[in-house]
Image (cartoon, rainbow, N blue to C red; front, top):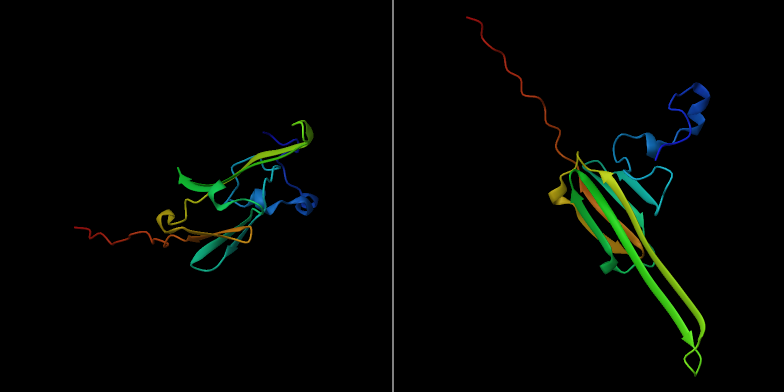
Length: 143
């Protein structure tokens, strides 16, 4: 969706600068005001380290895929708690469902070498950088 604030930037607007929204690399493709789970991205030199907080999720309910130059992290939760009395009537019934998803531009990443680990509620993705290719140049002889 569109934001209500105009796109123009003035000196006093720099105080309200959102680095996650305004960084061209790893721009979140979803609504910029919506943050379904917190994610940190660190530059480790030869790779980026993306860490997402996903506490309470089973490893089997977290999916990571790369498609069309975007890495998508999707976590799904389905929880039900039923308490019934001796006649089968509900005393308490609670349900919790949710799907959390974020996508990131990985056009500068070697996607076939991405590794993932999930430990203590933190999903860690090691994203190797592509080698910077220098433009081919050669001198052409004039006859």
